[in-house]
View 1 (tube, rainbow, N blue to C red):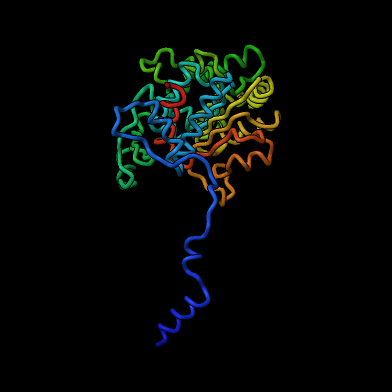
View 2: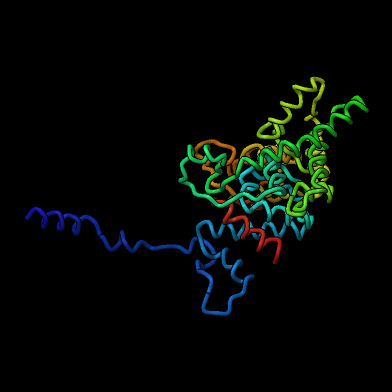
Length: 339
């Protein structure tokens, strides 16, 4: 009887069919569909199909379109990325872009620079996310995610760093001026001339192709360690950091069109986007990261937030692709730069 009464009330007072079958309007655009694998595979159609997939695939499809527009409109492309890009195989993709002059200005962290250089000496190795850290410490192996880096690589890097440091110090003694950070990074690229795997390095190709490569902050990581040791022996040694911001800002201001492609957050993202405020924002913006806006982090900040600061133009020429970059970045390059 109780159930019957409830049913009776719902039928008498509420029309369930009217609630379920509320009249709709065709709000939205296009049709959601996936790639048709029943046809002969076509790479260009496959990548174009991302636009219609929905979720983050559609955002990645938009990112591909924006990269193509950057290139078509001859925008100066500012490419920023965090150190884990160099740790992983994404480093080789960056080297491809720099070797072929497909990007025009680079900003990375100390880890991004030093790990790129270290790999010209020895590879990083496959490991596991859950390998015991104490065991690896006993073996002299450093872990970054599921990538292992034997400490021998850093022992070699200490010897390598003596070259650029001594060269910068000799120039300082001759001229009376300290080396600036941009020139110091070039010295690191030049010092790779004698390494057999130099052509795998974006640091080397940035030096060869005269593409600015900023490392911020330069005094972090293993590079910072060696600057520390060197300064203990040469108290008057210094590196000027002011030229790097002058070079970045001048380049941003003098570009006809600007595009930003940024992997992750941290200083590279902020350094590039902060400079874009001087010109009322980047013309094109593509973010690849897993940050959430709710935490208020730099990585999490989306392109619309950037517009509020004047870091991105107030147009629909921006996108954030939420996803792990070792998956999204190779797709972006394949579809945006290769096709």
